[in-house]
Length: 259
Length: 294
Figure 1: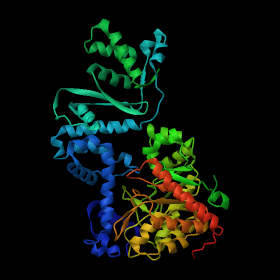
Figure 2: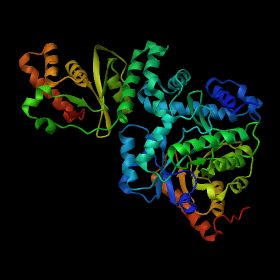
Figure 3: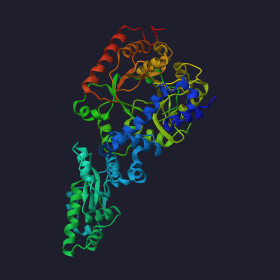
Figure 4: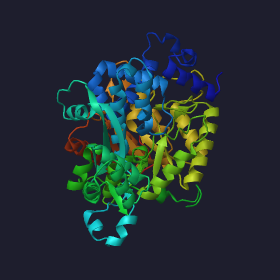
């Protein structure tokens, strides 16, 4: 007789690898070819995982279509089985999976799109934090500005893409016809965050991206201005550009704290 | 909170009335309309996140309704070590929600570090009873409170089982000194799949252990039935519910709906059906514990 642990190992191996040893332990299990009962569990295993991935990766789903998405989910589940108590984390390796496995790796836009969608998932339930406002900045004494540091909201993430995945995601989200996949002339940075409980993303100019990265690393406002100058912005325009970017971040809820 | 013993019966049987599962499809409606639902049950794992909408709505709705917490990942029947990272998250969520009670399932959900995200059946053996009961006691000690264990639907039986499901269920909760969340639909589904008398199941359940009941719909394929929570409750389940109320007396009851979500009014109408059965049965019935069914 199986111990409890052996029985569960065999049951799991049936769900994940179609191993048939568990059938000896099941009443009527030898009839499994005709017997739908074990198949209920195997079907439910994949269906539940696919449902979770469909929720997180709706644009990848739209791009691939039902059949190919289903196949992707099965392959992903077999390669990256869930190790978390919550399905919330199951899809966390999708972008890396797509980048590493044929035939998906031949279409790098897929991994880029999955990365965007995972950042949206991450922003959706990232930690809460108070939001600093334009009024908070206006209230700062001028001598504080050079040493001012900008703490970004915990939901703020950024990445870059080389394909037109941003309009593609928007079309998929709106249920519209998807634009044809096109490589971009220059790579595009974007930021994802949550404002008033709603997840958002937008593209970033290259100087804004550089400043966001520097701000997240703890750079002071004076240091951010030096970054802008180093990027080639004429000195007289630097303070105004830095102030304008900060104002945008503040008004869009990207900043948790000025300190 | 103290140990597992010494709580009086009245506290164990705190009665909340008629509730629903809290699902995000209805978050805004619940806050705006404050529907006449006595309480909500949350799926604990859905709120083990850091912030954003899930916790916003959880806190806002909790201000207006009593809540209980229902987990799906305890794997109390599993043979992997208990997941104390998960249990710590559960304890933190309990501190946030202050639920009336906390439940999970009499099943296993993970093995070898893999979470299978399904409520998988246990063999009904003495070995399983001892194993599960010991783990339940550890969980209760960690959480500082008794938990409720729910019976699951099942589609296969193990050759090595030595007793009926209800004998197993009873043995576990008595050895662990925990409480029961009796899922009436799951009893019905399993009775169809394994060809037993659902009333024999209900009559095999110790009256004083039942703290909550679940009702739900299922998918009927003729030869077998699958617990899908995507249909209204069917008549045989309502009848079994009436029989259970007659045996157990007033028990906090809720309807689980997880797929093909209907307009909220339909769930309220279904809940009203439960209330009417409760009103009828509990008015007519002998006092709790004096089952008419035996």
